[in-house]
Image (tube, rainbow over all chains, first blue to last red; front, side, top):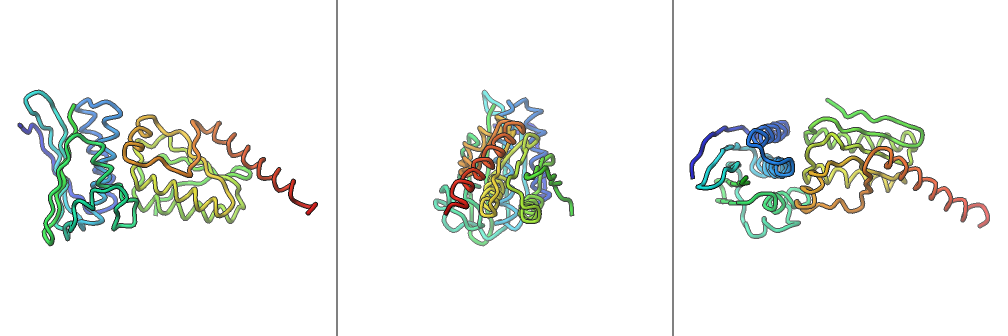
Length: 134
Length: 131
């Protein structure tokens, strides 16, 4: 897989979540994703950015345009240095929440993308990588 | 702090969300609406989200909360104008907004509010004075 373009954004606050949505939208439009695909990408990014702020105590987003042999995709990696997730299986279930939300952040955004990868180490942080292919 | 304007029209309150809302703005709208319902004894709330390009779980939860709070205060809520791509994404995300009434546009939403108000007035009239 090759990476064609990269950008990194800080994800620390409420207003950064809005900024993440705008940047992801701009990239998805530039890559000519359909309107529904754009909406799915932006929504997933919004959920994951909020997780980074609320649970990870802030972190950053790396946006990448990636190519495999046949397809182009938009890959988003949200990384924080927060407390980490003790039980990943539980965290990925619908309705599991520690933040007072509806518990759809991780499980829901997973359904909006093609590839979903999560790594977490207690005390070190969490990194979530999602890709939507064209 | 920035606020989303709430318009009053007879018995109803109208809100048009035209900005990409950050979370605190959504929370403020929730509070402002409940206050206005009580102040004006409003019977219905119409929320136009036709300019919203996404509804994530946070905004979805805000809409559901507004509908529940309004119901407790004896007011109906109708959410109108959701874009098709937003509807597709919202359902895939796992939110079907249970308990939130929706209509395709402002006109149909107002009709729905008027009907439900007429219905509740009729019910009141029926089991009112005679008992």
